[in-house]
Amino acid sequence: MTLITLHSEMNAEPQVTASFAPSSERPDTSTDRDKLIELLPGETVVKEGKAAILFPSANEVFYNPVQEFNRDLTCAVLTEFAREWMAKKGVKLLVPGEKERMVVSLSEEEKESAKEELTATATAGEICEDGLRVLEGLSASGLRSVRFALEVPGLRSITANDFSFKAAALISRNARYNGVEHLVQTSCRDASMLMYEMRGKKQSYDVIDIDPYGSPASFLDAAVQAVSEGGLLCVTCTDMAVMAGNNSETCYSKYGSMSLKARYCHEMALRIILHSVDQRAAVYQRYIRPLISISVDFYIRVFMQVHTGQAVVKNSASKQALVYNCVGCGSFHLQRMGKKTPNGKHMKFSAATGPPVGTHCEHCGQRHQLGGPIWAEPLHDVSFVQKVLSAVSSNPSRFGTAKRIEGMLSMVTEELEDVPLYYTVDQLSSIVHCNTPPLLQFRSALLHAKHRVSLSHACKNAIKTDAPPSVIWDIMRSWEKANPVKREKLSETSPAFKILSKEPSLEACFTVREDANPQSRKQHLTRFQENPQAFWGPKARARASGGITTELDEKRKMFQNKRKRHTTDLLRHKHQPCKRFKKARTPPPPP
Image (cartoon, rainbow, N blue to C red):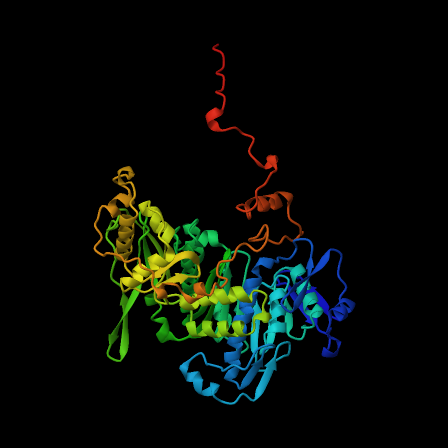
């Protein structure tokens, strides 16, 4: 049996210690589970992947079923990372349903070791002595940690931590219910203090997963120190209102960057969190290497490796950039924070020169907003993304959201690596007040003009291109000539009037090219799916007392999925009449 002891002393961190049952007593089937673990009143069993989680009916412990995609993708990424990590030690991972695959090392120096014969094997659910040490800092119900133990081979230990006593007790029960108490170690401590204690030690964590409710800013400093050399750091941000430009001052206080309310806000949010992590890592002579960075649904998720190297850290300023965004036409320019120049056998690092724009926009005459700094280097390691994509595509029955993972990662591999941010076709059309050109025709016009172009996984109508803004607006001027607008109705001070008053220096060709349609679009992969269920989106924060207030529940139902749900309840509509038809208040009689 699992004995859970909760310690709560004055001026001491709360802890949970667990003594686990021997392997001979571990449950093998759902019937055995039910015999060993009795469900408490109000508890239900939630199944996801290979895990079956006991979950209380009250909102005492946080759980969001919509984030199954997040957990599936994390299992897929962790499997590939473990495969490469263990290949250097001569261990081969055995994943159920997966065919024989070749292992490619993360770096050139590791290729020789990857060629060696893999003599040992590792399977999911078993302890691998030379495997990865994993920490889930904010585990809640323990679902993710249990799934790691059941689905990812090559793990030595998994620490499932949560500051809530009720969550920690539930984690222990779920680990025993799934028969993985030999792998999952329960902890009830402050996540930051737990990571700070492991910094600089030989037994530091090889994988750290930070998925909080809201902002992860308070955990980043400890995480970049506690992860081992070359280890994997996984971070989720759900405070998109802050990172997407609604509260720029809050974004600066948390992440050290000013967010902008622009069409490219979702990719900018990815670059803001990467900048924040890299800046914190540089303090300790460490730097990051992004593997996969995605914006999906209502959150962003980044996977990165953390390395140590003073020489590479000197280049950190050259990887960051400020963003000059025109408030009129939406044209943007990037200004690197630093520059590097060859100096014999070495590189010389210095401050960059700028700015790249004048006091007013050259296209519409409006002023610029200043955003950033942001991460200006590639968001992904394409070779690593392709390996994850190949593994998921060859074993689609492994994950419930395999089709969406395949579609999302396919788009990631098609993105231009060296082109930060993007435009949207509907935004460009809105600026000049003309009808929207078809996506393939606009992409073809850029290709005819000898520029590169791609889509973006972060936005359905995105256009990522290395073409300067002048070419973008020349293409829109050419489109407007074929689809004229009523210029007499345009204000002389409007961006549309000033942009269309200039003759295009480039005659755009809108003939559709074969290479204008990417493969992910041709194959009709699942890229931007509709909301999977009613009242879909972020869930309410877990409460110590459990339950959700009636007011909060009603508010959630009112504002989520509002485009699809047409209410007939007249009580939800305002009874106050229109202001134009309000009766004038009768003035008081004269004294």
